[in-house]
Image (cartoon, rainbow, N blue to C red; front, side, top):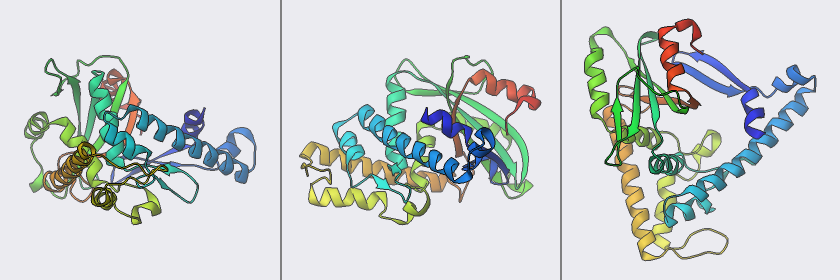
Amino acid sequence: MQSYMLTLSKKQEITFAGPLREKTDYKILRELYGISARLSRKILLMHQEMLSFTSINIIARHADTATTRRMASSGNYIAIDCNNRCLLPLYLIMRVLINKMKSENTPFLLKSERFINETSIDVNLFFCFVGEDGEYKTTFTQAVPDTPCMILEGFVRYDSDENIIPRKKYINKMLRTNPLYIIFSNAASHPQYPGELGNGTPFIDRMNKDMESGISSNPVGAVFNKIELEEMKTIKQDYEAKKKFAEQEGCCLKKPKLFTIIHVFCDSPQHQVSSLLYPSRRAV
């Protein structure tokens, strides 16, 4: 119910930062159901609050290790905004979701649109699936399944014709790069908390606090054991490495040269292929 109501309120905007931006139209229920703008906003904020609590519980439940489960349940990592919406660090969320997808052999699609300044030059689809060795593989093909999966939409921007990487060379670089590096690097380079919460205590400092004290901030004040503290140290090192990769290879808004994610949603890969073959069907 919460997801449906919030989907109704999504407003898509075309921008020069990439092919798509979304924001919440808090007055949409007034237009759909004839209620006041104030009541419309109140209802949507209530659904956002409820969905945020549900989402945190889902992340904690599907965490692949005791350490990430405790982090997802800890007051040291859960931030609450002025509208009482609970939020976890983006890197932690993506780590749990992608590892869960990997364990269930769930594929995903990277949709990359390349720009010269504000002009779109091409769109490339990369289908990623779990191979026999248990690791994700990337293919560049239109022969994709019709089963719904997660679509990660991103963009590349060049500031001049001279800096454009030939399409074949770009595709080969994407095929050579571990897709999980691309996703986790985007997550690490992005602000870990949205809006005004992004000005709060950084994710890395929150981990440092727990590693220095060895005590979590959950209600019972449980102590992280030695194994969990070592794993937290590994998570911190991975986070720092992915953030560095994003800045060097171009997986961030400051340097969108490889693939910078701007939108994540669920759709059929075949529908995404169809939207390229028949541009009039493309949703923007």
